[in-house]
Length: 308
Ligand SMILES: Nc1ncnc2c1ncn2[C@@H]1O[C@H](COP(=O)(O)OP(=O)(O)OC[C@H]2O[C@H](OP(=O)(O)O)[C@H](O)[C@@H]2O)[C@@H](O)[C@H]1O
Image 1 (cartoon, rainbow, N blue to C red):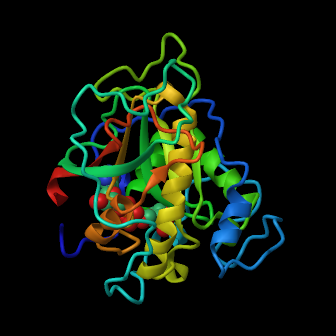
Image 2 (cartoon, protein in one colour):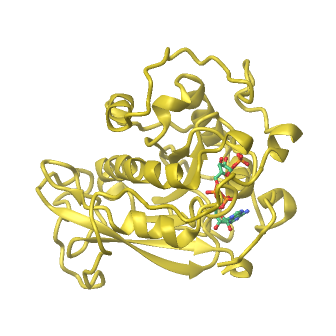
Image 3 (cartoon, rainbow, N blue to C red):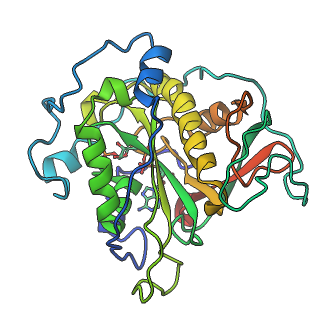
């Protein structure tokens, strides 16, 4: 992992090649219990009015597709405490299945009905250099988000430039709620049904991606949560996202992520990875993602080769 990096501006800086804007009609998927659950699991969450009252650094008004402004893009201060934090996890150790065999533990029987057995599973993260966005249709692309409705830098800006419609969905979702309520939850934005004649058919398999947003910090810039808090929020947020992913059944073909939290959020990647791999998921009627094999969901964490 690189020691230091600029809070880069992603696509704007040419970090990824060949970005294209994909204008699609996205519909958001959220857990009905997201907000209650988040409030319940986070003792620090004070109940707040759900009116989308902008905070001081919250963009306001009817500008849901407005790109982040310069001020927002520049508010990428590193967190005050870059010290290592102790992750709060619901389990210990990392996933350890073989993961590559054809065994179908927890695999849904039909193409779209998620399994709701008592199967428990873990996530195993495999680090790989490459382009996060070069994913097949049906892939979920996970990235960490603030809850203020801004994808202003790093990979979030690349998502913004690539999927402006998804950005609108995310932004609306944020403005309808509050950072306190969103912290530790997730938003899954599926692609619309494939339509014939899409233009973005070139390299990279651009269409058909789900955008998986995990709200691991309430705010960004000077208001970003501490690394410790970001790690703590990552666990329920990933759990929430996995539930949403599982409900999509086999429409989801793979789950991949960037090294969430490791750039602008300033949390060492190994800490985030450990927290995610320590989670025990599923069980008690919880749906199980279609990709689970032998109790393990393999998730590739892509990193640009220059940072790998
Ligand atoms: N263009 C690109 N293409 C491909 N991979 C890229 C990339 N740029 C960076 N990466 C990699 O992607 C991983 C995560 O690093 P990032 O710094 O992105 O995100 P993060 O999870 O630490 O932080 C979340 C906050 O970033 C934004 O913040 P703002 O809105 O600007 O405030 C959000 O909105 C959140 O608030 C690291 O492995 C980077 O190497």
